Amino acid sequence: MGKESPFSKNMTSSPAETYIRRIIRDWADTVVIPMRRHYDEDWHEHRLIEPAFKALMVDLGFQKAMIPAEFGGWNFGNTDYLATASAWMFEEVARADSGIALAFGVCYWPMIMVAVKPHINRRLCAEFAPMFVDTDKPVYGVVAMTEPQGGSDIENLDLLHGQTIKTTARLDGDEWVVNGHKLWPTNTGGLADLFGVVCTTKPGSDDDEDVAYIYVPADTPGVTQGNAYEKAGMAADKNGDVWFEDVRVPSWYRAHGPGLDALYLKEVLTLGMMSATFSIGPVMNVYEILRDFCSQKTLNGKPLKEHDAIAAELSEIVAGIEVSRAATYRLAMMLDRQDKYGPRWSPEILAKARSTKMFVADKCLEGCEKAMEIMGAYGADRDWDVEKHWRDIKMGQLYEGGKQLAQMDTARYYFDCETL
Image (tube, rainbow, N blue to C red; front, side):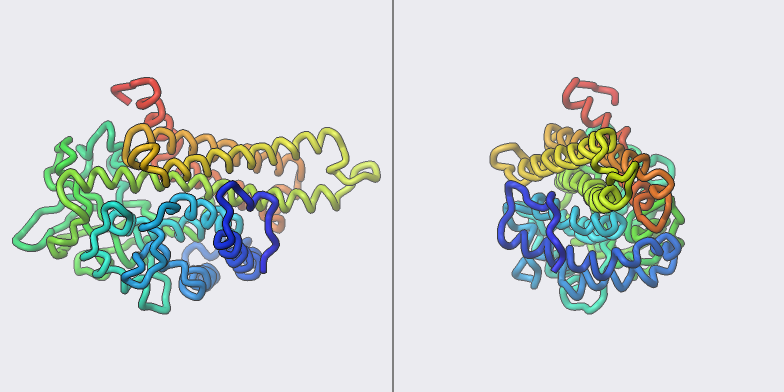
């Protein structure tokens, strides 16, 4: 199996974690890394990306992870280590390719609303679990939030409380009728199989009771997915437009109901901050590339790593990785210990999650830039993959509202800001 990284061990390491890390690392080293520099040209067709994703999700079974055991899954959502397990799985996948890591994580994202204790909705789990469990194909879950007119306003729930949501859900008898336009959701561009759609039942309302989270299978009449966007990085993460035109789904496809949908959506957003690992994984791989480069390349007859100036920069990169991992695993521990730190949907936990992700993305981007400077022209050469990680980390920095929303949520809690 894949060689263990010097960063892989952490305070929560267990035999199961070590084993699963090695499985993922073996997949990464044999299936993804040899081909990933070609992924940029595969952004539309996914002829290379799709088989690699299938190998992870179906052949190795990871797409069952979030599904409760009673419905054939791995039961991660009903454990006390959901965030921690997500962290070490995501960083290992992101070491190979952060776009695949993002697509991997978002496949689980819609089910967080109904498959995570203490708010498991067994009826909806029974409805949708077979999609993920009884198949030989990857199943793409999607959380549809962002809209054209308001960007990441929907993710800014503590301030706006859904008042800018334009996608509507109207109850007609025993069906919800959904209308609206979403853009940029991960796993769209024609891939999506199941949407968790953030809607409003009363346009313009700032009452959390009117925020609705409604499941929509992608093959429901009235659902249209646009083409994928071509982006600077993360080619394995497909994004596009989605239109819902008089889409009808059963009334019980609403996740929990008035008030609770908004509350647990905040938990979805907070757990989404484990996307810090989408920056950590790539820079862990950059370290590996840089370690080999600085051992093999020489200056004045000595390997680069033996020169004081280079060694100092190398140590800064490693320090950034170690501190970023420590901060992320501390956050994961807090998210897993709700008995001690409070619910994941609290403003305090959201602020801690946002600040962690913001810091980690900045620090990992800085480390990648240092590596490129050390490597010179090789750092920008696609054959070394460092510039790919650099672009991908930047894309990850923009995820779920970007740095600005992270700053606002952090300042709102720590400095009692009322208008951010």
